[in-house]
Length: 263
Length: 94
Image 1 (tube, rainbow over the protein chains, first blue to last red):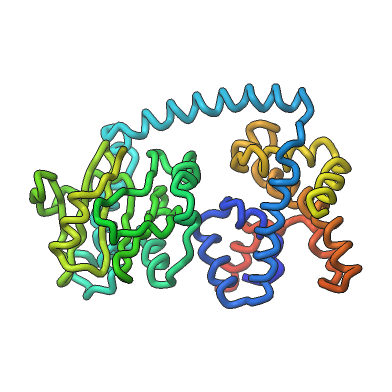
Image 2 (image 1 turned 120 degrees about the vertical axis):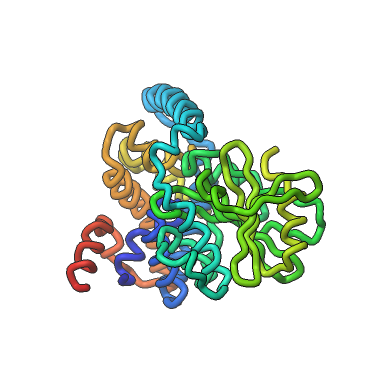
């Protein structure tokens, strides 16, 4: 990855239009290149300035009528697609079953836990490993949670909202789009007293097949023991919400059980 | 002053370039959605948008160059290198 390549795609990078693999490579480069960081800062600033400067400018009538027509078509298509993909049976047919075991494996790896033979061999969530091991930045920040909803629209086949926690110590930090193998997913970052908690939102009913099951506060929870830690999973509307972080097991169970994941 | 300069430069863009900037920065459409609206490949959206933004930046950069804040860089006006080509070269090396 060269400076020239990075700078010529900074616009797409700022727009969040790079594929996840390129996004990660760009971020690696940017972390190490102070000059490109300056270019990035300029690009971001310019996007904002341009947006504000031309916000009141009216596009030609013919463009607007064509655009609005296409908006309607796109919205209709998106609504149909979302309703289809939200059906568990439909995407059971299209998603590899191996995703389930892979997800558990990588989540364990992400936590820096000892590898278990039961979890070896998976690589689908390598993006998640990279995401955590490199502490990559968020695509959207905590200042505007509504931007998170908007950011993930069209990116994931399910709506993504930052989970809400009754516990005041849980602070939403930001979120980023990732791919679990070839599948879209959302990583939501939280901070609890200086400890990171990550909520991975994705679709894979098979991941629960071999999970332990329990109830906490009347809420059904699934979990996997990974080393001395635990991955706790809530399921809602065909979407999995996997909680993991540097927290004691009872605390993580309580957080997962009490979180408002859909509202 | 910056906003005025951007608006002035925006008005000087071609209709096609203005449409790209409008759809991306005002309507905040994704590249895929823009491609659907204007009827071209996503890669074309990326390169057209890149060129349009660089034209806008050019007017600001001219001021910055005059003030000695930055150096002139003609290479920025070139089209983006396709990431696919970069990946193919990388794969060939490994």
